[in-house]
Amino acid sequence: GHNNRKTKQRARKTNHEKNKPRKHDDNEHEHEPRAPRKRTKGNLPPMNPLWETAPPAIRTPFHFDATAAPFQPAAEAPFEYPACPFSDRWSVSSSASNAKRSSAAEVDAMDMSITSTPKEPGEKTSLKIATWNVQDMHRLLADGPSKRRSLVAQELLELNADVVCLQEGSIDAALMREFCGVDLLGSYVVMERPGTHRCRTKLAMAELYGYDATESVHFLWFLVKKNLAPVSSLMPLSAWHAVTKGPTWDVHYWGETDTSVHRHLRHPQVLRVQVNGCEIQFIGCHLKSKHIQCREAPRDSDGHINPVYLQKALRSRVKLATEAINVRTYIDAQFDKFHQERGGSLNPNSYEGPVIFVLGDLNDGPGKELFERDYLFFDLLSNLQGDVFFARRFLNHALFNFPEDRRWTTSFVDRVDASRHKQVLLDHILFTQNVAKKRGGAPVRVDPQSGRVEHEIHERVNNLRNPTERATTSDHRPVSIDLHFVPGAVEMGGK
Image (cartoon, rainbow, N blue to C red):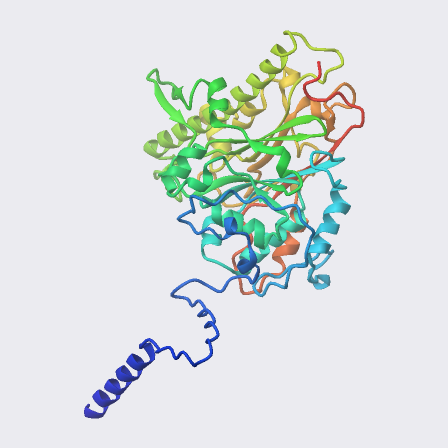
């Protein structure tokens, strides 16, 4: 014991000498600055070397810098990015065995080959639109570098969409800027509302974007290619509320006369893009109702669902349906506005309405068929698509002609309805009827069979995982659609 005490005393004395400030000798040469200490598990994980050269707006930590402007990539000559130690960049190939590292120049070349991107912003011949629910992206980014994070970035790079609607993104805009600027090689810009960089708390962010701060940290973000950023912007929430009569609405539950009030727990975000003189509205949705938290529907000895559980579940589905109807109300208002601007009548040379895409995760999940078939007698998606008797306002589905056996985006066992198939379509892209018309339609076209669930890319990227890893890039698969512009078509706003 005496020897142990002596050893500890010597160790303390040695550490004290090491920590004493060193006296400066005027005759001594200036010391080289000490290299920064490597971050350990107790602090933060090592970062990508690009992190040190990233713009200050990207490096802003979660407490947010009030003086930092939202990240906008500068128009400068491209440079070669150094290799990233924690993120494997792979080029598009038919199999994982042929995968190889690709540089930023190769990524740019892939962009040019797929979308025929011109040099001038707002002038394109085609666009690729995608929606993807990236499971718990806030935690993924907050935890720092990881194999899954690099694969998520790789999947987005291989999707190579011009506009991406991400669900379950991080509430921290600085983390999203870092992800776009570093992991995505600076090829994407996250679209932010004015004042985002001044939000220092979760509550402030939730109020700015119309979210329920008590609900979650999962945000919906639009990522756009950097050449589209100058012609893209998020619509103010006040414009939405002006046509939907406020942020809340009345709800009458099935069979009840009492009135309740509901609001979007995750408010839809509207991205407006001006391309080739045409304004396109992308409505990003991640519908959410507080479904009763129970992994398995309680049933009695005869197999009937517990009445208390059933009542709460039905109320949740009614709230979910009213969220879809609120989105539909906004879409109808855009058609009314379009007609009013033309004197209440349609110009025969016009293309009959605004160009609108609705994309995202509608959370039309557990017990869907059971509740709608046996109790509610309505379909959530139909509320959003509209009435077929008003064909000009009806929304087409991007996966209408997609093979039925591959028309799914997630897989789970429905604990409410065991008879339901485990492969479910929760992620959707819908678009206005005028976009699908060959003649007299909008200047942007969607050809038949141009929508798809990106099974091949998702499976190829996830095959790069270590066989012992269970976590995939996400429990959802991306959905995308291609559209192209028709030369000489009537421009948006022309009467």
